[in-house]
Amino acid sequence: MAGKKVLIVYAHQEPGSFSGSLKDVAVAELSRQGCRVTVSDLYAMDFEPRATRKDITGALSNPGFFSYGMEAYEAYRKKALSSDIVEEQKKLQEADLVIFQFPLYWCSVPAILKGWMDRVLCQGFAFDLPGFFDDGFLKGKLAILSLTTGGTAEMYSETGDRGDFRYFLWPLQHGTLHFCGFRVLAPQISFGPECASEEERRGMVAAWAQRLNSIWEEEPIDCSPPWYFGR
Amino acid sequence: MAGKKVLIVYAHQEPGSFSGSLKDVAVAELSRQGCRVTVSDLYAMDFEPRATRKDITGALSNPGFFSYGMEAYEAYRKKALSSDIVEEQKKLQEADLVIFQFPLYWCSVPAILKGWMDRVLCQGFAFDLPGFFDDGFLKGKLAILSLTTGGTAEMYSETGDRGDFRYFLWPLQHGTLHFCGFRVLAPQISFGPECASEEERRGMVAAWAQRLNSIWEEEPIDCSPPWYFGR
Image 1 (tube, rainbow over the protein chains, first blue to last red):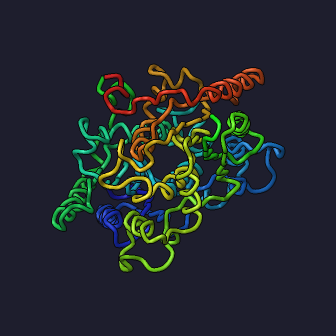
Image 2 (cartoon, each protein chain N blue to C red; image 1 turned 90 degrees about the horizontal axis):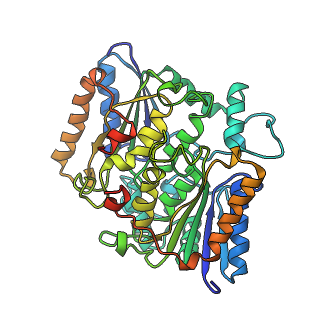
């Protein structure tokens, strides 16, 4: 939708990868709609995943004992977070929609993207206590996990040996994104592109482009526990 | 148990932290039993979490297109993985029990520990296709997640707003550890130490030491999907 701002947080090492194609087609389709699209290409940025003392510029609130969460919270309020975190927070603050594009590593995001979540979504910026779930500070924004898997759709079904994919998306969709206030759209899962034919891969890229064409009309999924597990 | 080998993979920035106390008491108790205990102190090691081209020494199998999983698999077979990965694989190979000690970050492990999993547990070393779950290459070894939370036990219950803790442990216990063949012991969860009294904190450390006293007699939990979600 013209005028909307989109942030794509992208975590793949290889520009020519299937994940790269999904990112590229999203940039193209959303730009065509008149959206302003920003990409955080984490590997290209050599984004720091480790949450350390270096994230706080200047003196610590408690110099004798380093508690990352508490220090990051204080540093956010005192504008003393490291510049790479501040930069990502600015992009996130401006975005109407955030797309996370990544290959599934151990039923979750790759460490470089986990580090983006650990460091950027700090208390004070993304949430507070109180100020989480529907009152999270990123409320009003949409988020989508767009991921590729090694396994097939069957493996990630209720009867598959990895179990229903909603189980492993729970910590990300509910525990992280919903916690920060995001309205979460259904995940875009491209199953097993490495085992697929070239035609099937093209089909998956086209399906993603087509979905993005009407993405602004979608309703968020219900992330709350009872529904999520079918109770 | 005398003669057993234990690896503690420890992810906290501050030696004086509550996580540090849990790690220290585990080293003391297991050493007292006559175990040989090794600690991978990830922050002290400045462990690299990013899975990149640097993990493969020498030429790539496919120089034109970087697929991390495939290249790491080949590099494992050709003994061409970077030395920091090889070092952790050696420690893991020798261990009878692996304890992961960490604070919960976004319902999962901190990025530095996720990176340890992404890079160390590569195909060929930890599993193959086939060669996973009960046939995973780390079968015969025990694993425990020992974690601290910000929230209370009630928040992580079936009726709490974070949902039953087993949901967010699923990708780690089933999708990662069980996938590699580990027999997973019940998690040790120290709920909300930052909100607890000094006496309560001492009680949590003592409870962990006491559990470790008879850890070798414990039966693994059943990680398989139907049980896990109470069906």
